[in-house]
Length: 117
Image (cartoon, rainbow, N blue to C red; front, side, top):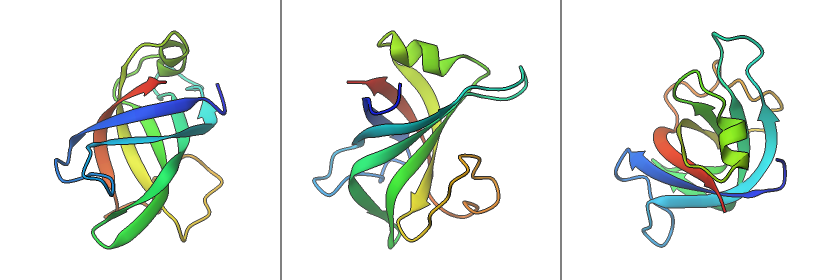
């Protein structure tokens, strides 16, 4: 699954757009994490093809988490669209752990539809 191209179509916030004004982001999946328990959710990490700036902070990577307890990794591998919550990782940060609970508060978060392209 790693190194696959992905498109993220942002639903909310409405003003999260790339430099050309489009409401979608593209990038490459660089990490996946299958939910270790039924109460947790699958996650993917995506390095953006082009960094985006939102509220004066530049982001070059996002973490996408399943919006429901469902196996998004398998669905993405089959070419299906999946609903995700998206969390931005500022370019200045180098976060190894995909679980962004501690550092993203107040930063970029969005809902999106993800699909491998």
